[in-house]
Image (tube, rainbow, N blue to C red; front, side, top):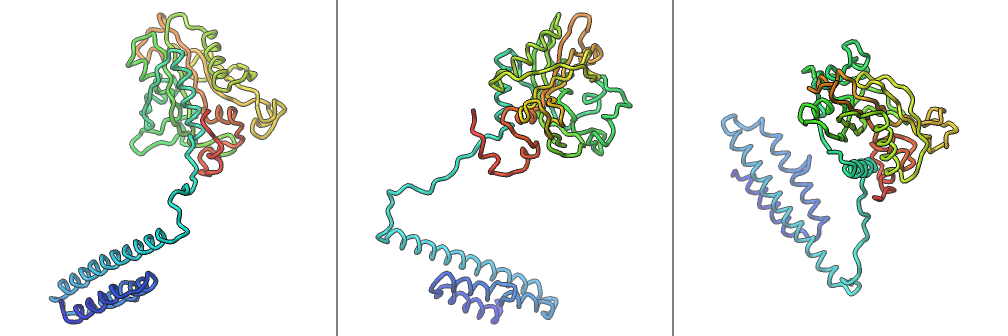
Length: 342
């Protein structure tokens, strides 16, 4: 180490060890390692050092910086320990007093609704399945009887990836995967995250959560579908809400329905959440289309089934009285702290 660096090392080391308090130590650190400190000034002179000496000089300055940083950290720790010992020996310190209270965490309302739904459906004999968020076009559209010119395939509705795959727009692709994997009869639910290129407002999100349901057996009818939906809603909401079925077109079911529930915010009178209709659209459902059964490797002459896609955020809004879907992903701790697990 050259004489200038050695002299600086000795000077700063003595100042670190002789610093009487933490404030003085911080001033030593500023003078030595700060933007206008002694070591920074030396590094700025590197261009004036002969070329053959620059590597050794630069390394020596950096080594000194590491050494002094370690000394500063050690000295700071000494001050902290001394301060703690002084506080512990003061007469006003009582180690038997309770510590500062802290607020425990909460389960997110979507997590609560999902867990409750899984519990209900497991009790009804369903299996809980999962599927990929990044899907093949075949599973997301083709196998579900969605034609090539369907608007859902457009970029305005679907997040397409550069490799030709996509972020799944619904949990329905797992219907095909389940039929390929399991021998009927079977019942399955698929809770998960979905993505659609939608404008965000009080009742719509580009990232949302669904729970797909699928039952495949012999002689399944609409009556089985209605009974399952009513049982599910009664168990989750702990009360009876008026529901209605209205015709709906979905390429993967025939016949298809929309299941709505009375808006709990306006009691059916009409508000901004229900768009003045008095109803909240909760889930599409219907009998599995024969073409979908064929894509899943099943004979529609032998097997029938029903399927539904339950909007978990909308169910949570109805269940907890939440009037803005954006609150779920807003990150406001005050919002989340309201929800205790039921």
